[in-house]
Image (cartoon, rainbow, N blue to C red; front, side, top):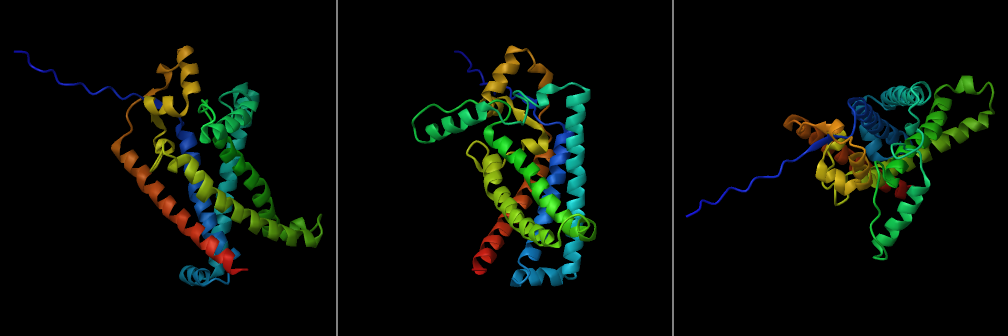
Length: 282
C-alpha cells in the first residue's frame, strides 16, 4: 500500500519593482497631496458648513493657510529633487533609457496603440494588449503630477509672493492665478481620488489594494499578469535574478494596508465633500 505524498506548495518568487528612494518619494507625495487637499478644499469652499467647522477646530482659516503652504513647500522640494535626480542620471550618468524606451515614463506610440487595443478588448473586438514596465495609464498618472506642479504650483506661488510677481505682471493676472489655482486643484483632487485610485488599486487585478508601492516588491505571477512584455524582455536578457527579492515582511504589508486604507477613506470623504459643495454653488 503506497503512502500518498503531500502536495508541495509552489514557491512564490518575489522581485523588486520600486527602489527605496522611489517609495519614500511616493510616500511624501501621498502625505503632502492629502495635506494640500485637506487644507485647500476648505479655502475653496470657505462658506460651506463643514469648512467653517474644520477651520474652528484647527484654529481658524489662518492656520489652514499655514499648513497649506507648508505642504506645498515640502511637495515642491520633493518634486525638485526628483527632477534633478532624473536629469543627473540621464545627462551625467548617460542613462538615456529614462528619457526614451521601455523603462521611460515618456509617452510613446505604443501607449496610443495600447489604449485603442484596450478599448477594443473592452468591447470584445480584440485581444487584451500586453504591457511593458509602464502601461499608458501609468504615464498619464505620472505626467498629471507635472501638469499639476506647473499650473497649480506656479499659480499658488504667484499668490503667495504676490508683491514680487506684481513687479513684472499685471495685477489682474493674479486674480486669474487665483481662479486657475482653485479650479485646477479641484481637477487634481477629482482625478487622483477617482482615476488614479481605480487604476492603481481598485482594478480587479489589484483589488482591494496594491501593496507594491509600499513593499517595493511584486510576485512573479503579478509581474507576468500585469507587465508581461517587461517580464519576457528581462527574462530573455537574463536579468530576472538580478531583481530577485525576499518576501515582504508582515509588518510592511500591514503598514501598507493601514496607510492605504487611511488614504482611501480621506480621499473618498474629500471627493464627496467636493461634489456636494460644488453642486451647492449652482
